[in-house]
Length: 305
Image (cartoon, rainbow, N blue to C red; front, side):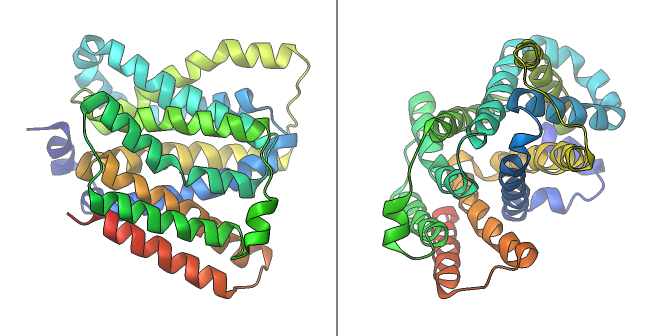
């Protein structure tokens, strides 16, 4: 019996944790908010400090709920310490720090557009690590949904697409996505343990690895603005894109695999544009409808067996 079956037998809300498409869609919703917020808070909190606060805060929130499973899974954690360290370092420390660093120098639009290439890096790593190739259906679905992302982000205009400029922040964001691709692909090697145990260890190690970088960052003169906006942002990033987002992501990948789960990241710019319409008063345009249709069609094609 796998950890998932053991956990699912007694977990409240077990129905939700057996719905991979819903879990992955919610992850994209949370990550869309994280991308927009990461750009918004760029002048308030430096990137390494924000990443440390994100994972240490999420770990503190999770620990009371994970204590029992951690005690039960501790022998497994020690046995697979190398795998846990690698997953924590790549998926928690490096990926998010590079993404936050990139958002210091690039725009939210560029961040949303660049995230849409993540499925390609997931496919690359699943092939490199395990020799698994994309099926023709998966590749076609990814291309269709990627075109939908481009339509949304570029407002359906070739002029906007040609005018997009890339800088060092974009390079950092691309490197972050390469690291994310490795994490998503390598999740199939995660040890057999309860999801709360896995998350607690990953978040704790991820925060621990960031301490030297955070100290260097603050010692170099970067400051943290401790105002209401910062504290509200801390609460959001600790709970939604971190605690819930990674719990849903890991479970979704376990249920349908990394390659079939990867196209769901194309929902990030979809949700980002919906947030802009709902919260910022932007107008719904025809290109939104076209882009949404392409993204949903691509995901449907890519995830069907």
